[in-house]
View 1 (cartoon, one colour):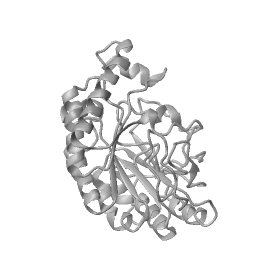
View 2 (cartoon, rainbow, N blue to C red):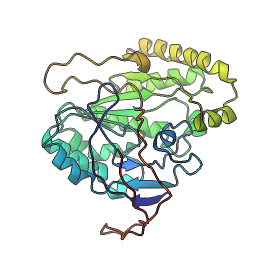
View 3 (tube, rainbow, N blue to C red):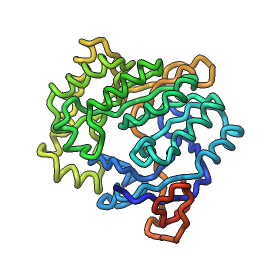
View 4 (cartoon, helix red, strand yellow):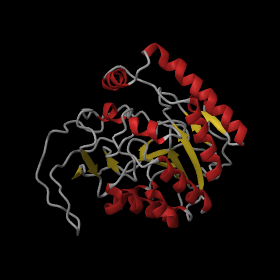
Length: 313
């Protein structure tokens, strides 16, 4: 289990760099899911070797958010653009839920992206929010492949059942298949398309692996059997197979890199579409993650808190 650390929050809604979102809302920094391909450690400046060991909790973010929705321009709020808002810590802390309560009262449109079935806990709120949607990040239909890249994440079947529950509640649900794993078989992505359609997904958006120079590239080179020059070719083959199967089952398909926002009706985001790909926020979130100060546990049910960091996002 990761160590839980409280950090102050001076800003809840950050202008989003992601098409389809006006604002980004991340109740946590760091992520216990610790996916092998995750770009976030490089973005926030945390060493990949220690990523997943600590989750930073923005305990005051619902209070800050309540002030900001009264002052900022109404728009689509993307929840979990850099970290999963429904990772295990959320079950007990309920920070994401408290943010949803604020957004529901303000009637702001919300788009959630997660790997965790815990999101179904908050269907009572999501069903009251105009233009709410929930995306499930699922890159393959084969749990054996999933365990290689997302060993700490919920099984595919659990995510599909959660998608079914969200869609069944009348909330728009979609699948973000990204990044497609270099080791995946075409049969695996075809299974994903069929599972998504059967569960009631409104759309499937897919993205290929985009390795950058640095730590992520070194991880992939050490774990991926294909030579680097073949990554793009393999990704394209998987993309075409996925698109073909989506066509067969009647599931709308889009490539993330080709996604364009849907024309707005002028109703403040009521016709928004899901985000096309994970956000790549350039500013570092953590400047000095090693600096530690003793801090008293603030919750009624105390949990370990031993660091306080300044907020840059």
